[in-house]
Image (cartoon, rainbow, N blue to C red; front, side, top):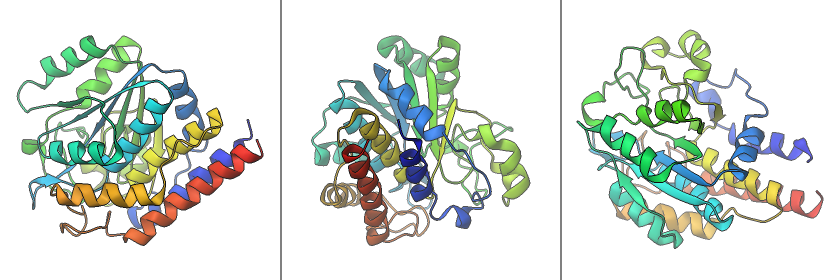
Length: 292
């Protein structure tokens, strides 16, 4: 398999990392390794949803990437299960409907996370846990926004899923763009040394494979693109579907995590910017399939 294509995918989704202070770290090969592992998987739990306190609803980044990956996995005959909290429940339901998927959605509530996450592991017996833009607990046990706002009281603890996965031998994959997302503990030393508030916000949990992206949705798309190259089949949806997905989650109340407004933007980036990244990823997949 020509590794150049996977490197190109990684390069595309790095756009905007300099705005997050994460452009100085390289994780070459993580995308290929994560996708190759998923290709061998059977049941994959995908956890997403990042609540914005100012709006008390989930943001536009995360669910679209999660649904994109879920769609790719289902096309490959895998079982995908989406997990979120009440703040992103309607957002995920709407995006699944827009994409025509029927995979289950499980809602984690505050207060009984340990028992609930344990029951999910027993119920589904996943081979993989994938976290896409999901708040992670820092070393002090709290969850923070990138700006250092404590959101622990409104974020159910889903780090437990990754911890249980490791105990049970399941593979963990994380996608993040800010350092405060679960799984980002894999690069904790860099986050602590390089990011403003890095020591405070850095997620403690470390995923087996970590995908860095300027926007976490792009990381979900990149995993779908990498699976496409590995299988020789276009599994990544087109820009019309992407626009439909964004429209559906905005209608469900989602807000841009940066502007806190319910607009067709993600992390302050325009619809055109996001569609442009998707088109670039699809172009690489097309070339890779035509010239393996």
